[in-house]
Length: 265
Image (cartoon, helix red, strand yellow):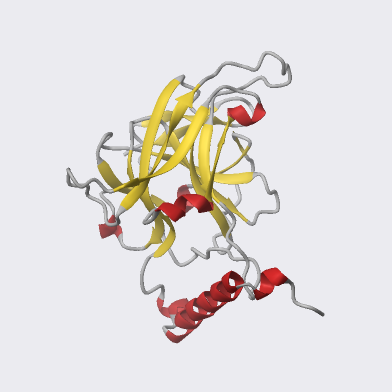
């Protein structure tokens, strides 16, 4: 058997060495028994190249009229930005609910999203995140106050399944960090809640991203510095819990067409 050029490339070998080091570190520190020694970065925007490992989507892909962009923004030198790295990503554009006149099969429009690309394989096979030892998903972001959704894609039996949760902004216009319990994500497919609900495949997380599907026409603007898995509650300004009060109707629907409720603290 002859190795392919892709397998012999420096990138493939370098990724394999990095994965070997990571697995060795997990074994030597007995993280499977004692728990993780620190947070797990799922994606950050520390440098301009971080944008290249993401993709954007919007209804323009099916003939709609929304616009979406994901750009890297360097940290300001004139004002103090409360972020760790030298820059962040700006997810922005305009939502339009106008339907394409020449496509009668398209009956809904008005969405935009971005997500990370699938990680490139290593000698150990497909590269996936294992977040099973972590309790929370953490996000450092600055929102305009619109109703964004955090999207998690796993190595599911149904490839189009997503696990989603509302991204509640407590201080629109300011940087903040929120923690979301992994167990609170909702399994969906094409915008509808899937019943019966099944637990997320936390050992096989493929991609992370953020979407806007509120179908409210107009501009949107969300800045993201990083997304990571953690057990340290002190890292967050807020923990998005599930109290029984202040129930807010959400964007997602069940198969009967009823909106599901998100619980906002």
